[in-house]
Length: 503
Image 1: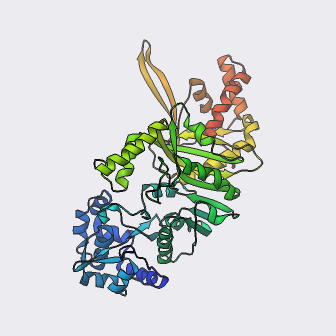
Image 2: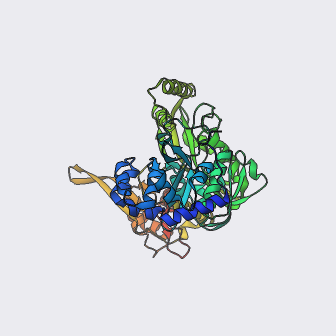
């Protein structure tokens, strides 16, 4: 093994590295303070020059920023100062730095990562841009968009035990420490486990780490919550990179996780994962993913995007540092696109899956598009969605007795077109302005019914009053209204006016 890939991130080394980082102020707030808003934003866009200039007056913190965030070579004197009490030989032996001429460069990515309340450090491998070549097969990815998406989509309600399947650099487990008492993290990659262990040591966190494929390392164990960011890239059955390729064909990796995960949950336990699914000619994607589910499992599949096969292949080639125009890129793209064509793939869906073990009841399975733009994290919404499913399960036969209200975050939008008698409303749309920004088109009768949902009268009375005003039979109007009411309740756009509100 080359010195560039060697790892010796012992507990003693990580403890002294932590001291180094704390002394320099190398955390999320410290980096932002040293760089300033403009340079920090430019760095996030992949424009390093402003950040490099801003870091020059930041002392040891500036040295760490240039080493780990900008990939620059730093003089030995500056590195010695920045890493005290660690010596340069120690950092090289551990695999953290490497010599580069008369100076030193980072051999690993050590990056501040935080949320509104906490700041941690995450250790991972350098990406292809900083390496200057394609990444090795056992490359351990940093905190990318997929990781951040899953963080935002994970419920943070307190739990006793949590399992992080395919932990990678450990970032999902880091966030889990805020709401789970005991955490177990698994990975098939020895290098990923070594870097995750160093991440946890650096942050003084206790996480159980076990190696193995999928759920094999935790056979016969059950958990209150499971999170998983699996190798969900779809295509031919190959493994170029363990962080993204499963060796299974098509979307079989996502299917495997969905099928097996509920069996490792305690009753009422929740699993949340990122997943991909094929859009196959002549097949509805919702039917495809619903077939993956085991019995007695509530499930919410939220599709965030659908990629064209050509765009998908180009994106993932660039991810591994391969120019799609190169001979290697052309060959890989050709084989990938051939596989899509042979399997009648029209597109690749991507999104979030929330699963709950629900024994002894009729499960609720919903597959829907969430491709609209929204800002709110989905984790709290997923937990509330499960609450609303429970409420509907317990009150579904008595909805007519419930006094409903429309939350103030729900607005009615009207679209009109000019007609012979002025503007004529052609579209009426309910829009929830928080959460995932759900929208529902409704007709005039539905808008009149919802206008009466102010918590004063039960739904049955409102329907009878509306039916009388329209010369309709109340039972026919109720039969048409109840499916709409259920859907609006499930989306948090209509809530009971009692303390048992599902919002």
